Length: 162
Image (tube, rainbow, N blue to C red):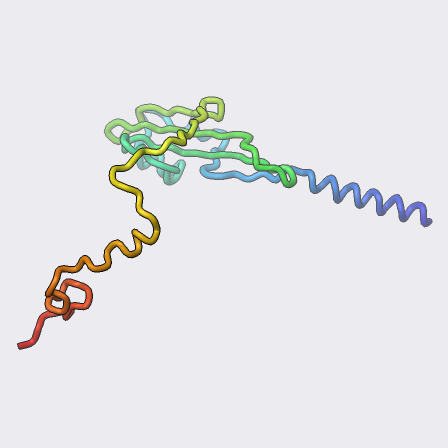
């Protein structure tokens, strides 16, 4: 009986450890249904019908206001490792005069890696220390106006009564 209990505990522990290795899947963005891209027809659907079928777009083109993007992404995380993107789909719907002109579907294979440039743009002038920045404005108020001008710090702060 004791042998059976120890095997049960070992099996339970192995099951618990195996469940920790199961990937955690997370959907981000617009979840595309199986028939989603096919149900929008160029020349037939309008902005209103696309809104009723897909809802609000994930983003709208910055320079092309008549281009809507529906983005979705599936990420999986295994244990303590970093999440990995399994699938990414971007559905771009282009409109012309309020009617669908084109529907394009992009996947993770269509993406490009953008390298970030670490250079700095030089600025004119001199670099100030922290003390120069803090004390740089001390004594720069015009002479004889402190208390007389309502727009300066320490001024009256409103219209004067006569």
